Amino acid sequence: MFRNLAAAAALAVVVASPALAADAQLKAAVDGAQRAEAHKVRDVHRHPVETLTFWGLKPGQTVVEISPGTGYWTEILAPYAKATGGKYVAAVADLDNPKLSDGARKGRADFEAKYADAATFGQIAYVGFGPVSKPLGAAGSADLVITARNIHNWATQPGMLDKAMKDFHDVLKPGGVLAVEEHRKDPKPEAPNWNDGYMSEATVIAAAEKAGFRLAAKSEINANPKDAKDHPFGVWTLPPTRRTSATGQADPSFDRTKYDAIGESDRMTLRFVKAG
Picture 1 (tube, helix red, strand yellow):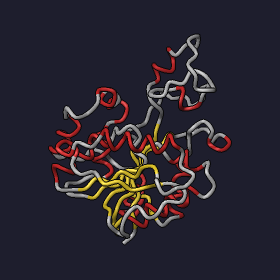
Picture 2 (cartoon, helix red, strand yellow; picture 1 turned 90 degrees about the horizontal axis):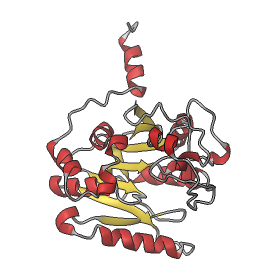
Picture 3 (spheres, helix red, strand yellow; picture 1 turned 60 degrees about the vertical axis):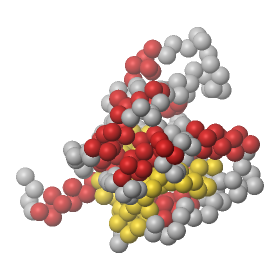
Picture 4 (cartoon, rainbow, N blue to C red; picture 1 turned 180 degrees about the vertical axis):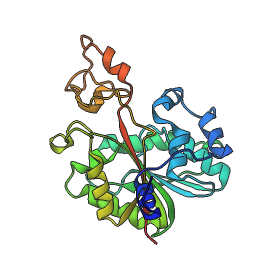
């Protein structure tokens, strides 16, 4: 029993229940035929309805997704925004960056082509994101910023993590939410320069708080107790990357059995709020 209500409230800040009712449009988007089978099979690890509900996704919101990759969340969030009168913004490779690689330019073009069907995905908005990118949108214009499994990449680039967090804070409305999913190293210590892809919750929380965010809640939705976090090629040994050599080239002699049995990584799922 808690000694007083204040103690109970303090605990509620960092331990949250994901048992929130998801709206019908979200379930329809997750179940929709627009989703690639390669993405659907990952739902058992990524828990899309529960995760988005925990983050506070609601009809009519402006949602900015950072570095959406192959579009796992795009295939859910864009149709959901279309159905509910919201707006989905994909923060992708920054075409104004003079150092942007040809591969990154092609990746953005391919992504835009893949999700160009407005009848299915609505009018997706695009904004550049990177080391020298401009704001993600007008100040205070977004309800929700989502970053999934990206922070370990920014942490290895001088100044990039601070810039990213500031960009997120600037574009969010007062009371807006920064939603984070990241490979979790706890309880083990972080590797040098996060070279195994795992981060501690303390590192991620400190970076967000430095930018002015307040941690509102944690969830164990995406926890995986089978993940020992000591794999030969870091987190990329596990699905979906399934790396079998240090170079990334396939090694047919590598036995993947135990790593595939683990599934995807143990992950922190955090919700931060912009004060106001």
